[in-house]
Structures are given as C-alpha cells and as structure tokens.
Amino acid sequence: MENLQPNNDLNALKDMFKDFQNKQKKTGRRTSAEILAKYFVPRNTKETFRILPPKNGRKHIEEAFFHVVTTLTSGGRKKFGTIIYCPRHNDPPVEKLDAKGNPVFDEKGKPVTIPAPCPLCDKYKTKLAEQKPLPKGLKKEEMNPTQLKIKEENDRIYKEAVAWQAKKFYIVRGIDRGVEKDGIKFWRFKHNFRNQGTLDKLLPILQDYMANNKADFSCPINGTDLSITMTDSEFNGKTYKAISAMTYRGKSPLHTDKIVAEQWLEDDTTWRDVFLPKKAPGITPLQYLELVVEGNSPYWDDSDQSNKRWVFPGHPELEEAANTRNRDLGANDENENIEYASDLDVDNNGAKITAKNMTQEKVGTFKDDAVDVGASISDDDDNDDSSDDSENYTDPESQDGDNFDDLPF
Ligand SMILES: [Zn+2]
Image (cartoon, rainbow, N blue to C red):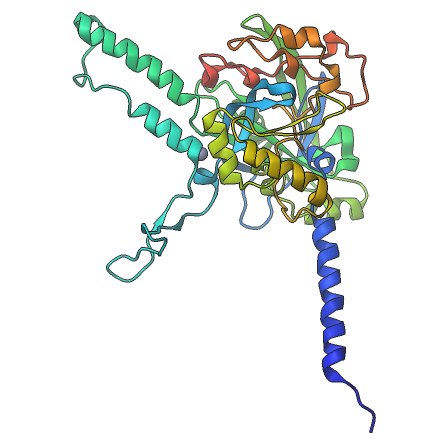
C-alpha cells in the first residue's frame, strides 16, 4: 500500500498557505507614495471632486480626531502642524489594568474599560489643570489686581494647553477627477469653530443639489461632481491656499465605464488605512507620542548624505537600536498599518516636503517662534532641486498661530 505520508503533505500545505499569507502581508502594506496618492489635497486653482456613497455602516462625511503639533524633522528642524492620529478619540476603549497589570472588573464581573491612552491628550489635561480657580461668573472689569494676574496666567496656560488638544477633522471619500488613476482618495479638513471652514462651504452646496435635483449627491448615476476653486489667501503675512468657491456641476454618472465605477464603489479602503498612527523603528506608536510630548520626536535624518540615519533626541539607546535595526531588518519590518515618521513627511497639504528644496540659508533663518520655512513645499517630487519659491506655499494649519482653531479657512 502506498504511503501517503499525510503529515508531510499537510505540512507542505501549511507552508504553502504561510507563504501565501506572507506574500499578502507584504503586498498589503502600502508604500508611502501609495498612501500619499490616497490624500486628496486641493491645491490647483481648479479642482474637481466626486464624493462616493459611503460603504456599509459608514457616513458620507466621517469625523476623526488628530493632534496638530510640532515635531522634529531632518536636520533637527522643527516642523509645525504635524497631524498625528489620536488613539484616545479614534480607538475603541481598552481594558483597565491594576498596578500588577491584571484586568479590573466591576461588581457584575464585567471588565472595566477606559479610553485608549494618548500622551498628547494627557498633556492637554495636565496643562489645563495648572489653571488657578477664579470666582465663577466674575467679569474681567470686576477683578482686583491679583485676580487679573491669575486670569492672565490662566489665559497663557490655556493657550499652551490647547496646542495639545485633539482637533476634530472631517473626512470625505471620493474621486479626484484630476487624477482618476489614483482611485479613491480621502479629503481631510479641520472643523472650524467660526463656521467658516470647508464643511461650512460644502454642506449648503450638497443640500442645494439634493433640493434642486431630488437626488443623492453621491449617487453613482444621479450624483454630481464638485468644482472647487482655490485661491491664495493672506494670513499673518503668509500666503495659503484657501477655497474661494465651491459649486456642483450637475448630474453625471460616476464613470461611463461600468467596470471602473464598480471598482471604485467596491473599494473598501477606509481613512484608517490612510491616516495612520505615526511611529519610528523599535518603538510603539504610544512611545512615539510620549516622545512628541517630551519634544523629542524621532526623525529620519537625511541632511547628511553620507550619514542618513534615525535620530532619537535625548534617547541614544533607542537611536542605536533603531539604526541597527534599520540596517539589518529594514527590509523585513513586521510593522504594518503604521506610518513611519519619515515615510510620510507630509504637511497638511499632503505634499511631500522635499529636503532638497531646503537651502542652508533657509535653515539658518529658523527661529523657535517662526513658521518653519524649511517646510515650504513643492508639488514636484524629491528629484526636483530647482524649487521655485512662487510655487511653494505654507499651509494655514502649519501655522503655530494663536488662533489656530479660528483660522478663516
Ligand atoms: Zn489624543
């Protein structure tokens, strides 16, 4: 009788599946360029965007929370307006652990949950708690000199605290008509407390379309493209790209080719696949956030061509490990769904900041309280050395301005 060696066959099959899974894992991780291609960032004078109908259980316009903070980038320069995923606001609650690391249960024996930890949110709260109490309802004109002094100090603390607070963003999924080949993209914009933000411009137009056409704006057959007109806007002596007008173009199919339309409609990429938590090699996203709070965010330093490496300010042991690891294991990194601090060195405009368009002179003019001139961006890729200043602009949100939340765009 023939020996079928069932165990060996089974093992071979298992290996085959393992290989297959590994392959999938590898191809599953998008490169930074691929992720960038998923950002929709209006920066041409005219842009056309088509909002897609939401996938099951999702909304047309989703909400998510990100911190907008200062980090470090190549050459140790400060980079204002880095948008960082907030685990506390975006992740599900986690089990509460006691001092020994065991889960805590309530009276009914159910595990107690707490919001996911976020060192940036913690920083916001501890900073706020530094404010001294003043009698409730006391108006500024009624305050005595001591109280006025406390108020002044409280205001200063508040400003500092708010810089660490998680900010609400809206995310819309759709097609950039200018680059349809990129497939579905995600348009992320910040909530504006003065009702002067992108959402405040978008909603009335969508409502109008629905009222006038009796159709869902995102419908693949009866929906509409949106025309967005961008303009240069001055704020605090800087030029930004801002939306000057938005209109709907009228009923049109999502795509005349049914197969393309179906591909887009079936794509189940979500914003979570695109706006990923940041990290650096050898540390967890949580540790990365801790280092951001410390003012020691790690960064990929390629300012010295002959010595490109990870820098972990104030943490030589982590730096050593990161660089050893980077050399030895870089190709086999097991971390997926993670945005390396250096991978996606994008500002809020989604354009890649090119280290090469920085001159030493520009670096030299950097001041702590100044806008990061080095973060001037170019629409071109890394290979463009000839940066034209007229094409560079700073994003409003990369401002370290006082009224961050109240920027008019
Ligand atoms: Zn947070």
